Structure formats: C-alpha cells, structure tokens
Image (cartoon, rainbow, N blue to C red; front, side, top):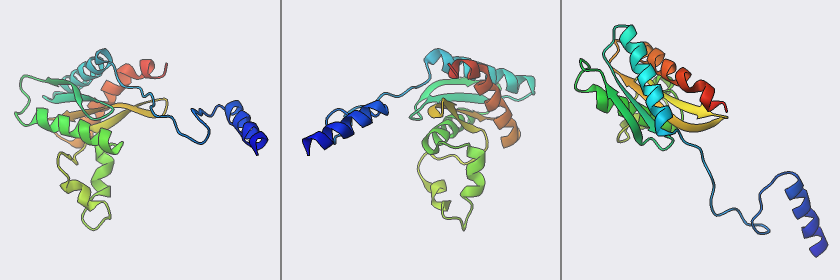
Length: 168
C-alpha cells in the first residue's frame, strides 16, 4: 500500500502537480493583478482614444477583484460617468465578461435575468475584463460615449496599450 502511494506521488510530481501533503490541497495560491502603473497607462490610453473620438468620458480600471485602482474623468464628462465606469469595471471583473455580452444574456426571460438586479451590477456596454495568459488580472470600464459600442472601442484601446506587457 505504501509503495503504491509513493508511486502515485512520484507520478504526480513528474506531471507538475503541486502536492503539499499526500491527498491535501495547498492552503494558499498566487495570482497576478495589474500594477498601478499598468492600470494608469490603460486608463490614459482609453481616455485619449475617447477624446480623439470627440467623447467626454470617465475611465475606471479595476484590479482582478473589481476594486478600482484608477479613475480618470474628462473635465466635460457627465456627473454620472465616474460611478458608471467603476460599475462597468466591477461588473466585468466580477462576471469575467464584457458587459456588452451580458446585455443579451440578462434580458427578461433568460435564466440570468436576475443578475441585472444584483447590487452594483451595471449592464451597459463599455466594461471589459483584462486577461494575461488566460487569467483575469483586472478590468476596465468606460462611461460617457454616445453608445456602448463607442465605450467598448475606447476600452479596447486601453487594453491594447498594455497588451504587450500582459503577454510577458
């Protein structure tokens, strides 16, 4: 019996499986998140893209938990835009989905309709998760452009500004 356990342990280790004690999971784990500098760079690029499009917006970049790291507001953006941008970023991080995609998924009559009524959820275009190597590291939310598609374009510009650093 002991010999079988030892063989299985060696196979698991050879496969790269982390084993702290036989049959037990690790007690902690490591995760990646955006640095404040990367969050700021993404926010600035998104704001610039919107300004170049003639849009006055607010941009929020959140960490992987949805906590806002950076919030920038164009001086002419509406008073509602900072909170809305932060809500979109939180929603994108929380559901690990583009908020534009959540619009159709949460329409009345769909199984996920109740999501719209959860506190803090903002189901409007302009919120996107930011991923690195297949893992969520943050999110971005834009509010104030004329349409959700416009907000999405600015969010993509923000993500693209840090894309190279996310891939390393």
